[in-house]
Image 1 (cartoon, rainbow, N blue to C red):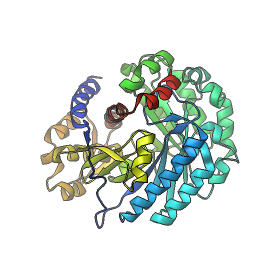
Image 2: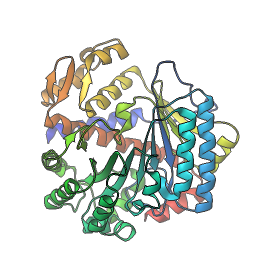
Image 3: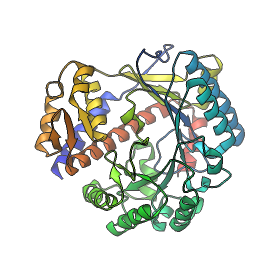
Image 4: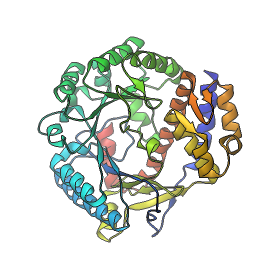
Length: 427
């Protein structure tokens, strides 16, 4: 698709330029602004085994180190509370947040006490769909998001997940075993693996529809320089020429039982949190090593070093080590992309935020989307055609790929002792 190729090329140039990090010095996070709504993101950077395609900050699990980390994490939450922040919702990502469920529960309960949080979303892996882990989160977590990626045994072996989590059928049974425990049970899936066929994708969709999940997120496969070599060895080289066709298949098949709530998230009932919390919450505060915050038109990145994280929190500071402040035009583009990824853009809200209409503020972007046939309706609210939804998948794929590059920038500040375990576990 020509429009996809043009959009990809443009985004790779623009995002590479706009996502270059600078040291933050001693400034740290800014405080909350009156009337603003923020989400709390909490990062747990430990996994029992590292996946070859993941660029998030993560380390092989060592129980003593992880328990000490959780203690520091709760200290950081108290620091953020002392700044005056309150949050209606909390998203816990990783890594694998459920590696030590007792520590996770203590952290959730503290966050609820400190911030008045009413809704918690938490990531996990299939081996934790047990009474000992998932069962203990019932009533504490409103949305559990399970990293499945595919039910195909061949793909699971390529991803080094078959030995860890079992066959696709075993994972499906585990999903069904926790039906009803959580208001929202989400399955994280990936499409456009190099060895994935149309039939494998259709079978993944059929199993999702037959499963207990009431939400599914199908991510386009993406990478970053730090994991490109290990991913190529394990799953092969990514081919974007098939992506549009795969997206069309999964959209058509999923919409027999689900409805889209973002360009790549589908729900049986709608209205709940999604993995891309940045759609519903333009501003968020990140806690934990490797977490991001987006506040007042700037991106703040917490240190990826566990040693530095310990030192900063012990000294009474938040963990921010780098940042990037965005221009007004970059902020407009970000709002444009996030709103349309969430399937609609309110022109009045855009003008209230930036003082100009979206047509005047982003004339080239609007012209491109119109020429591409991306807009279904253009009144006070812009909505998308199926082609427009796919173009938003392309935008978010490139956006997240470049955020992975941001993570690579932050990771380069790690000492050789901290990077060696992660490298060896990914290969």
